[in-house]
Image (tube, rainbow, N blue to C red; front, side):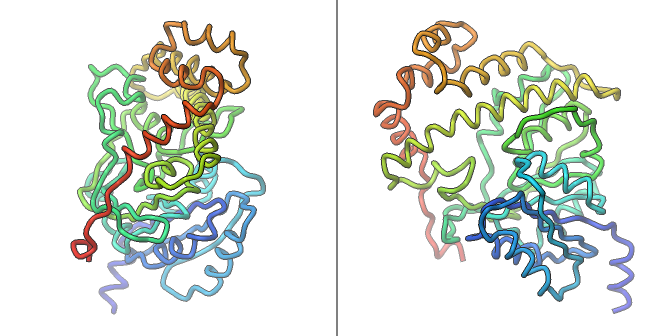
Length: 355
């Protein structure tokens, strides 16, 4: 017992931060995953972004009932901040030197924090991510030990924000991410608009300040795909109604505005940072600012304005999207969206192999 206590005392405090918004259906499993972490000493922060359902009440109930070895507290934002600013607010109030992030609809495996902490102490990198398993709405395994191939593509858009001759651009996959506490010590712009994910912004920042990102070759998370998710709802479900497809298709404007905000915020960070920085290809960032501004306001634009944007050479990469929605969210655009989702559905693996 003495050896165990001595070992615990020699290890740095780590923060496990669980973020949620309107996820009462899944939050218990997510919290149970947090409580099961085998690393010590561990600070667990259960944080709610001003949910309108019972998410925060469940957080409070489970925090009060917890009797394990970790320090646990539940807190709630006074207003809805959006994912990125929610993460920043919790990071700045945390005490750990390493911060492990988790979403309120995913489930962390019990060894997750320990594996990340060991890698952090060995490499002293500032960003971490790993393989993950994919589960469905009911928690059934769809696929094991996968990673986002989209983020690994050489032409992934955020990579063009930097000049490649200075080395590779590492992108963190948010569902499995963790960061050195120092990664959050960057200047905050005076104004911002909601950004729907934190991983893209954190990846840009770490690459800008030339800090190392490490991929851990283990599956440490169960990543849930379901209809209510912000970014992955269309990838698993095939039996959606017509109105549900319209709703999902219209979300593309919301994502475009988030991407616009991220690009603007990134340029703010470039201007405000006084440390040694990697060179930024501002021309590529400006292209995204222009393009996402048009896409995010597509539903508000007149048909003539849409045609003008369609003919603009700067919108070349989005012409297919604009053509399908030239007259709004029509049966043609919805049919295309449905067909794309059917092709991108994940096959369910044999349960015997997943035991």
